[in-house]
Image (cartoon, rainbow, N blue to C red; front, side):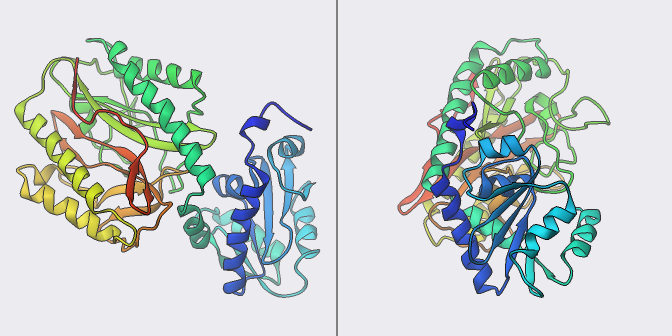
Length: 398
């Protein structure tokens, strides 16, 4: 069956190349198979987000077992072996046909809820369960040319939106109103509107924040917060009115065909203070120096240390990546999820490799005043970082 989603279908060759890379790891680690269930991982290896379990043996053909919707999975996925199942018994029977007797099977233990783990543990006996999440995340870290093309399309749409912002911002409008107008624009371009986050309980609201609200703390593991709409969702934009001479932070995650990019720019109706302008320029210098030093083989921790040292030499050291409780990172991987590898952070000694895609976001937070800084998404090539957009870095005065 050919559905209307055919044009965005992940090519068959792409899926099998990804699976082959994972199968090499399974054979090296003496793991007989892996069972993939998490949505982003499932989409990565199968091309569908339907309710399914994907069995990837160390050798041989993968088996996609779909509970709902089987018809949609047939439309979405280019895999050869796709079967309908009703529940755990059918899944167990499908696994038993491929793995005989005892052995080891990988699961995504970093995201699998405990209640499901116990059900899988019972279903998979006598197989030994191994955590395969680290290997999956490492494989997904290196983006293929197909994925980079998807990411560049997301960046292209983001570029259009940021260029439209000066026509949308009006003094006195609320953050939520501006957020809604930006979302309408992006939805009309195909934005899915749901950035996936792997970390537990890290729900992400829109980051369209002005003045003091962009420096308001929240639970989200990022440098900015926002008061949100109340205790039920205490993060992101609010009904605060946008005023003059205050930074308007637009931190937007665009998701096109599953792949996301992360960009931030600062706008202002009228000029900002010399202090905020100087802090913004410091963020631009941090970005420039990281871009200069980020080559294949560079160490992520050392890049973070460079960013931190530049911030500490400035008069804004206490405001770098937060205030009072600063975050120990300056960049994060993106792809199908917002929190992929690599992380450019204090305790991550990761060696950068061509094909890695990450967002750099040096920012300075000033309680009661606002946030300034920058965020751009890059891909690492053999010669260095390639930025996905050519947006102007400077504060846009309206």
